[in-house]
Image (cartoon, rainbow, N blue to C red; front, top):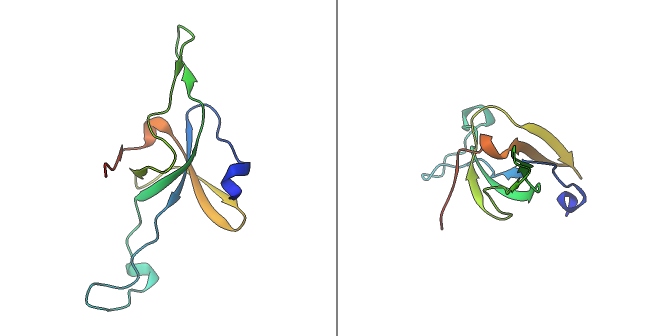
Amino acid sequence: MAFRKFLPLFDRVLVQRLTAETVTKGGIMLPEKAQGKVLQATVVAVGPGTTNKCGDLQPISVKVGEKVLLPEYGGTKVILEDKDYFLFRDEDILGKYVE
């Protein structure tokens, strides 16, 4: 609910990364260093978009609730009510998952 108090501007997208796998399929507990960086996230808020040279509004390519693939590095960490969120530009998001 904290992300409802935060509205990204322009072409920014606020995402929450999915949690890393802590147990293998065989039941072995993975230490934190052995867990890979999670590149999947859920979109929780989007900005209105940017304007092009003609002054037309270009909307964001993702919607709230969609699962997206993020680059390994980048994004700005935002802490809202003790939860970690990340702010990315729309153009930095690599793709979205179709269900």
